[in-house]
Image (cartoon, rainbow, N blue to C red; front, side, top):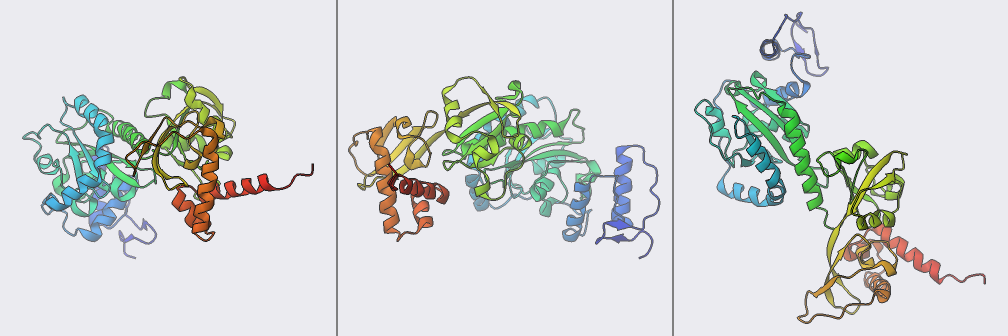
Length: 429
């Protein structure tokens, strides 16, 4: 391999000795010369995320000096994109307004993109005369993904899912050399990227820690999105410090009706560890050290209560949830059942609580025009058993199809069936 030749397989190079660079601008200039002219990986001069982005961009963008068009997507695609991201835009509304009000005296723009890099929201204030690139990019519908506009902070986040900043000449295309941007990811309940929050400035430096600010607000939006997508989950809020409860830094856990932890936010993962991949290894009692019934009783308390996690760590926690599920009783009657999941909930919704704790605030018909009589709590478990047995028979004993039709996990259904077998077993006395 000739001197200065970059070895893409090993990520190393027989490089000439680096020249001294005393300022960030000099370091980036040296990094660009090493990477683009000498074929040398400029490790230590720019961040690894930028180097990896340059590598990806160099495979698709041959001319770094060309004019980037910053075209908007087609009207039909924009309409579909905005419709698909309606929930994200709704939950982000408060934080976006706060950011824009706070940054109104700066030249920064707040940009929100979807997971593919298409701008779905941008600050209202127009770009100034000294911001020619922002005038083109800061528009709803413009695609600022890496494959279109090269290395940018939102482009890197959309490609990697990791927060980053890109400063000046760290951008791939020369035309973006006067831009500064910092971006952070927003994830949904499945852990997939839902959107990217970005702060961008042109011709002037931020003058504050933009990376920390965008990370904080992205976390707040993500927490709102997780809860908005968890209508049938018990939401546990907990933290080691009581001052962090009710802030973007509080830990959140979504607990499913079958007693497993469906999701954790980042703060929750730092306190409990990453969730196991297998759903049957996410039992709430094993991971949290408390069973589902005791966690649901937290909903009756207005103030946070002390909890001792399975790890031994002491935290303060509170819980809340609200569920609405369509149900069909054994009689064939279709109902919408709404239950406030604090003292308890319907057994048919999958929550493992004694029948005496069931609460039925309101029952409204789905198909029939008349309002059915409210069912006594003592008969709900019998209706639940009858519905499960009837559905199981109709499905030929197929537990998986039965569980899917009833809206519960196979584990919950198996526990119900085993419990009934135990109740029917003869006793020695």
